[in-house]
Amino acid sequence: MPIYHFEVGVFYHKHSLKEAFSKETLQRIRQKDIIDVCGFIGDSAIIFEREFTERNIYSFEPTSKNYALMQETLRLNDSKRIIPIHQGLGIKSENLKIRFFGSASHIDLRGQSEDLE
Image 1 (tube, helix red, strand yellow):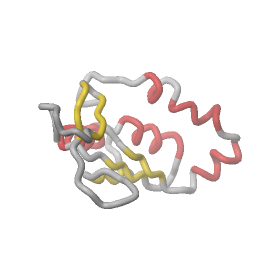
Image 2 (cartoon, helix red, strand yellow; image 1 turned 135 degrees about the vertical axis):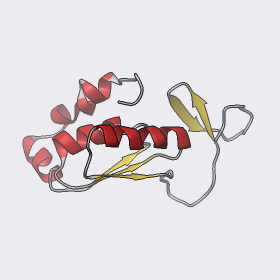
Image 3 (cartoon, helix red, strand yellow; image 1 turned 135 degrees about the horizontal axis):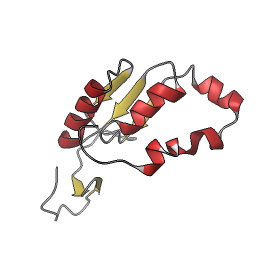
Image 4 (spheres, helix red, strand yellow; image 1 turned 120 degrees about the vertical axis):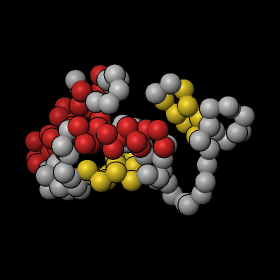
């Protein structure tokens, strides 16, 4: 990873997908593309690529800093099936401001934060 940040849910529990779904469902998922919304630095996408699908993973990340880190993560992990997309994903097309809290972020409806993108 390009930064020292590891989410337990991603690396150890793998989002609990193996416990949440039957073996039959996991086998069907292996033949499907995956959409990874708010891809952060690509950590989840790497797990999806290695363990859950033989198809493509479309990883959406709207922030410039995290998107650049995602591209580096994909390069460092020799990823071949993750397609990084530098934009958010939602029900309608609009421009919104994102506020940062360390490694977390959220849409800032007030626009009063200094740490906005």
